[in-house]
Amino acid sequence: MMALDKPYLNVPGTTIFDAEQSRKGYHLNQFCMSLMKAANRERFRADERAYLDEWPMTEEQKQAVLARDLNRCIELGGNIYFLAKLGATDGKSFQQMAASMTGMTEEQYRDMMIAGGRSIEGNRYVGEGPKEKR
Image (cartoon, rainbow, N blue to C red; front, side, top):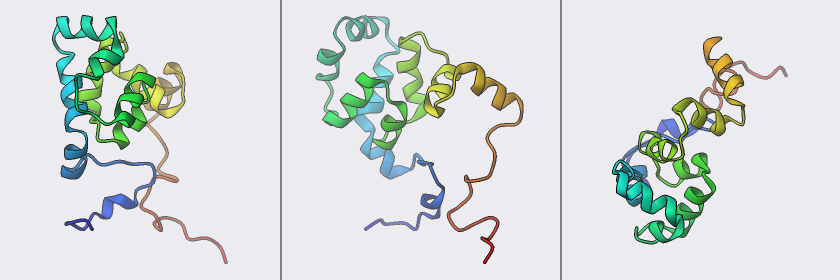
């Protein structure tokens, strides 16, 4: 049972980084923050699995990091601003990371954002928006 009413859970395809997600992803996010130090980035690049095993993350979290599955990392408590450290370690820009999360190329993602972003259609609260014709 959740302690608080969370109406934002009804937004399709959206994971809100709230206190519950923060607790779930604490060690994942701390791992990401460790990558701010050059020595830690070098150790991670040298043996990703060994470095990850130094952190008390779940196996699911470790596998998501190894696969660079950012959407899964977010589902497992990762915060995009912490995950950006992982992307930077890989030499990726925030735009490249965001594109990978949408299934678009970097160019497609850039063009979508320049054109005003993603359509609201399908991105409202569940049950909100135009009613189906009966």
